[in-house]
Length: 334
Image (cartoon, rainbow, N blue to C red; front, side, top):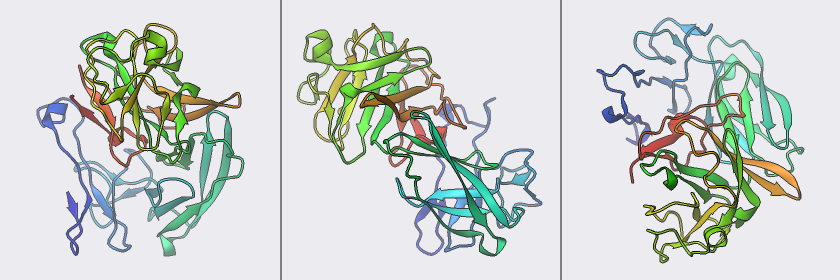
């Protein structure tokens, strides 16, 4: 854990779990992180270095950004959020080897497709400062917006709709008990009957569990915590999309109020069956237009990822995170 030497507050931390295969006797990649001091208001930033990058530093000092035994480097800019949604704002720290000039950036959406390119002015005399990025007026629909920075793997996403893929259970002991949790982190109620879920091979629209099955809830769920007859998700609420043939489900009511339970309107599984390392994307139809809302895995972005879920593991989006990288998620057992 990295602590502020004046206030004692935690600035950053890394959690180590030998059970996840990161121990020193494991053959998996080791879990490491180093830190850089921004030189601004006692703010530090964790490393995002890439091997072989042309921007290198000779030693682990002041602005180091790599693990022991590796070259010290970092990408042309280190970025940290200043705000959760639009208008966008970043703190940006340019590399000591990044010359004065402009750094290109792109905001883009997948559906509807659009890209907006702009530049950020960098100066070594002002290496750490707040950058405000206002959305281009062409982003009229509440589509998911990705942002990339030139010569950087950094990815930012901005969910303008408010519905997030909060958790998935892709590898239960009973394969019929797969589920996806959606949470409304926005300000407006949303009708999930207008949404659809897409995996690598199929797409499903939603129906309330009662509409599809005729029963109020799957066996194992209590009506005091869950409802199979609601499709509207209010701010703060979370809903479960379950397999239509699920049985003896073990779910936890999450969010505020009763959790709606929905299923796929057609077919016998969610998608083609959720894969342990599969990406899934959430879309919504607005006036006949298909809008990209959120993604688990960001497969349509410039920086996709996958997470291998073990048996009965639930992949859960951490509080305050948006799903930009694997570190935004944690694996839980319910």
